[in-house]
Every structure is written in structure tokens, then in C-alpha cells.
Length: 196
Image 1 (cartoon, rainbow, N blue to C red):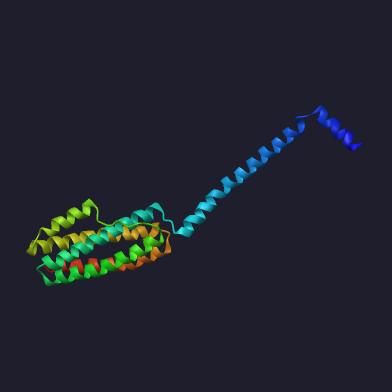
Image 2: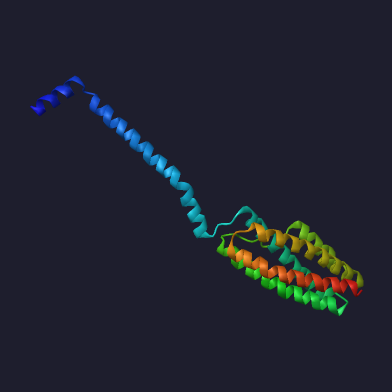
């Protein structure tokens, strides 16, 4: 008897079964698509966290800090060879050592965050290096000291600002460590400036 009614229902409504299945498939497709759309942001966030992704501010800070560090090393080498005063030559050597180490640390952190650091300085920094490399004697010493004081004041401000903007723990620790180094360099440069 049940088979009779099923046959009657199918005979009188041949498309009814297909409409119903089609509606179910559309609904199921919608639910799956919605589920994927809702899950994607958390998947991407987890992937970024896993891969050590960086914010735009972290990217910018790393690029600027790397360029600044390379510039300090280049200028420190010039100070060692072109400086007249012994304290300028010694300070130049300290800059090469300290900023060279800082550059290496920053490269390692950037690599963990999947950020590539620049391989050379920007045109602005290059122009400053070129300008100072053409100077000699006391004029070099004065220009180098003045440049170092103003540059380290700018660096100190940039590092302190970045300290509140970055989220990566390794980068925060790097900033904290290097703020002390920059302060020390700034104080040494100010003393050299005063002892002309």
C-alpha cells in the first residue's frame, strides 16, 4: 500500500523530489561556503603567527634600523681612517663593532619574521656617507661628531617610539637592548663635541 502512494506521489509531482534535493544542495553549499568564509580570517591569523609575520610598522622599523646601522658602520670605518683626533678614531671603531653586532642581531630577528633587510643603504644615507668620506682633518672630525649626535638623537626617538608599536617579542627585546647602546653612543658623542 505504501508503494502505491509513493508511485501516485511521484506520478503527480515528478519534479517535486528534484526540487527538494536541489534546495537541500543549495542550502548545504551556502552553509559550507559561509563556514569557510568565517574560518579564513582565523586561519590566516594563525598562519601569520606561525610564520612570524610582521606588521607594517615592524617592517618599516626593521628596514630603517638596518639602513641606519649600515650607515653607522660605514661612517665608523671612515672615522677610523680619516679622523685626526684619537677619540674620534676610537669612537669610530666602537661604532663599527657595536652597530655591526646590532645589524647581525637584527638580520637574525628579521629572518625569523620572514622579513628581508636591505642589502645597501638608501640614497639619503649614501649621500651622507659620500659627503663625509670626502672630508679630512679637523673638518671631518667636527662634521662626523655633529652628524653622530643628531643621528643618535633621531635614532633614540625612533627606537623609543617603535618600542610601543611593535608586537614581536624578539624585536621588542632588541629595541630595549639597543636603546641603552644608542644612549651610550649619544653621551660619548656629546662629550667629544664638548671637548673640541
